[in-house]
Length: 170
Image (cartoon, rainbow, N blue to C red; front, side, top):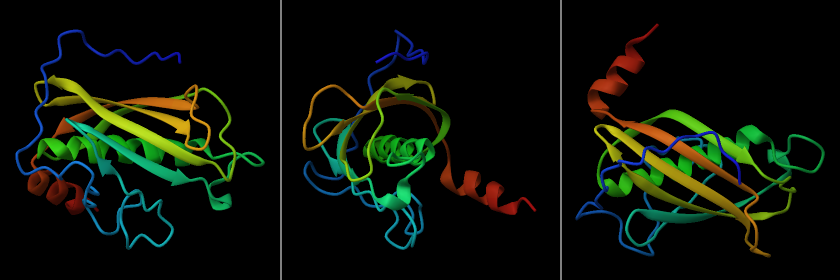
């Protein structure tokens, strides 16, 4: 897959938090009303990312008709949201809160409505407060070449300060 996203060569290794979600368990939603992972988001994706070894996670998104963009295929924005969520949930395995600064998505092939889309995400490393992550999506029924991939640059924040300021804006 082709990408224009540049991952620095000199990333520091990221470390899994001692109290991170156990391997094989669902990473808890960071917000019950989150469009990506929240169980209370009525029209949300309801992703359930399973923690893997190290700083990895996997989830399956059932591409429902309501996610269509072009006739019979997923809307690119829905896929971008799912990728953003997967990388964000994987980042949580470090025990920090990081928000999206850059999201890059490579659409390699049309993803048909009705597809069970397996997404594998991992943290690539750190540079100061910056977290670099990636995600790759495959057809879960017929794994082969990736259907899409993405990279993210996230910035570690103090959640109280960050979300207090965000909610104070008119």
